[in-house]
Length: 207
Image 1: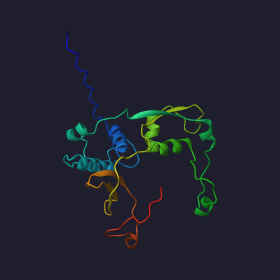
Image 2 (image 1 turned 90 degrees about the vertical axis):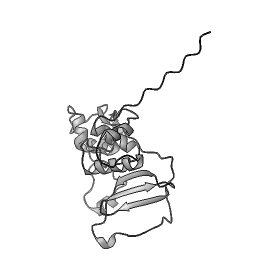
Image 3 (image 1 turned 90 degrees about the horizontal axis):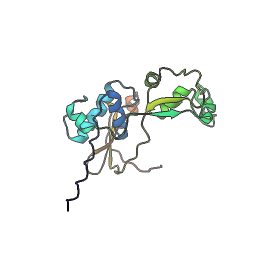
């Protein structure tokens, strides 16, 4: 009898082919470039450097051949969002002053563009470019738009240490082996005296 056929090898996932694909895939892996905008800016370069450090490849901050070989798409970079009547009904202007904001039950979204951009970690400009035919001043229920395919990131590894680089406005989370599992840009207090410096410890964690 003929020998059983070998199972077909799984096709290799494609390398990222654009800055947008790289930003989306970096986000999925916990390396945030801030707002996804499809542009190779400073925050994207820093996210790439962190990914390169974690992957033990040259730290160039560029979408070079080594990086493309390691950063492969786990799913298409864009998906669609369909506006529901309920979420459009919840849109309302956000108060300007802190006192007025404190008196609101929730601080929601003011516009449909803001809603979809925030939900999918994207810059409003990118959302507009992905949807050139949408009139963002008159979005109706059932309107379908293209957005980055990102969700809330879930991590299997446990955090053991946090590193904050004040000058670079960067935060890294490391596991017990010193491997980077999360990276993202952070805001730093303008007043130097308000910046905690040195080694600090987490005393209480509240999910």
